[in-house]
Length: 321
Image (cartoon, rainbow, N blue to C red; front, side, top):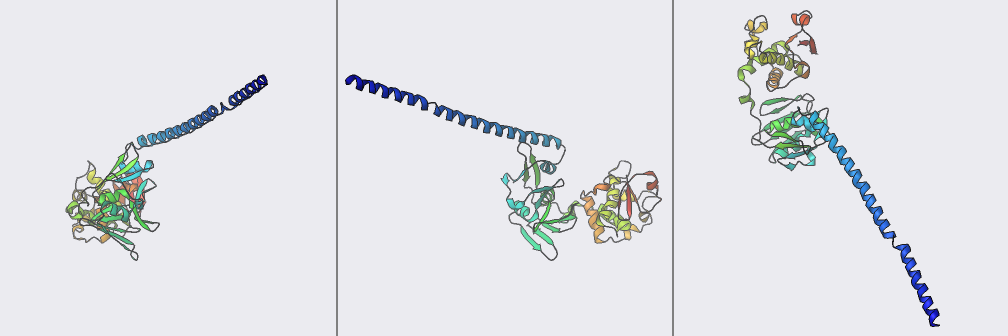
């Protein structure tokens, strides 16, 4: 009886050992499966990160010669103002190589004391601070700030109920400085003086006097960019080493501008658009088609038409480089 009982116990013990041997390997198998899964996920993340880094590293050198704002357009970026993330309401976007922001919200971001007013009837947004008076009219080709005129080739736009302009124009109006952090892909704006230098102190009054009058005499009835183009030709000559280095000097050259030679030009009173066109050009505004032009005419048999390449036709004028 005792031997039988002992035999039964031995069988039970053996059975327990066999059962243990069948279940014990399951835990390492589970752990191994988790480790393999983690490795696969980590590998995928590493591959994705390498891909993002590759794209970023290619985009930055490709735009190395561009301005900070142009660099921002090449990669997906965030906007910091004095090191603090700009609110989402600024709505920084890129379109056709230009970075845009919602003007009212960006203005408040740069100066929280700014008074913003929208006139729905005239489609004009004004921003006023203790240092700055800024006006933007939807559809207009410029931003006016403290009497300065900043050329916007695509104009002041209305997008989703907000007035939208290029970021560079807002920072210039507020005397702020844009920048680019290549390691992070972040656009930075650093507050500065709070306002652009006034037009009264910025524009050379003699240059403005003569440039506005020659624009009016030659193209006063033309579209704004056509008026600017005439002014650009004059300023290109001022910058060229083969012409005089002042506006009046260029106009006074023999056989060039007959209205100046006759003395009539000084007595002309330019219209408002001619004065604005002159200020846009003096503020660096460039109509891209005529950026290198040195000649223009409105006739079909001029010296320029026979000897130079026509680069653009704007309104009633042809422009040559």
